[in-house]
Image (cartoon, rainbow, N blue to C red; front, side, top):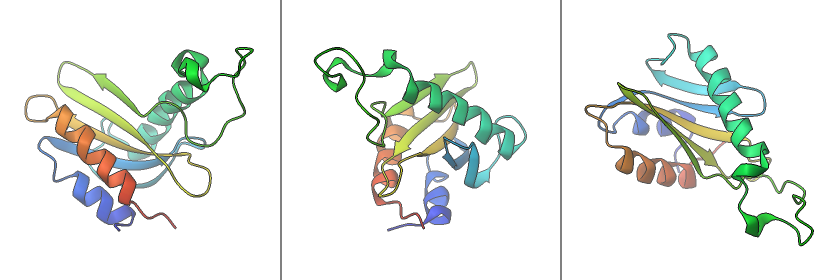
Length: 138
């Protein structure tokens, strides 16, 4: 079971990996980061990716109908958002956010920045899911 540093180092072994971080999406705080930062500043990247994660986790448009009550209202948050991954593609890169289920408040995600030419988005999704399942926080 890898901790934060081991998890990030393993994420960086993915083809095309340029940078990785583990971020608390409620505060925007990077719990750890490695490699380059997409914006040139790891802290700013953590805050900006956390804003995207919060939007996806909090807006009902991203909540499947089967997570709604019979009256259509959203149920009380159960921790982990209904969203599994967020993917943003640019002309030169892939940005992947994978929410991590934890025993406390599930407000953590893995962020990976991949070079679009050498990265493999499908492989990255699979590997990040595996890392998230094995990650030990605390």
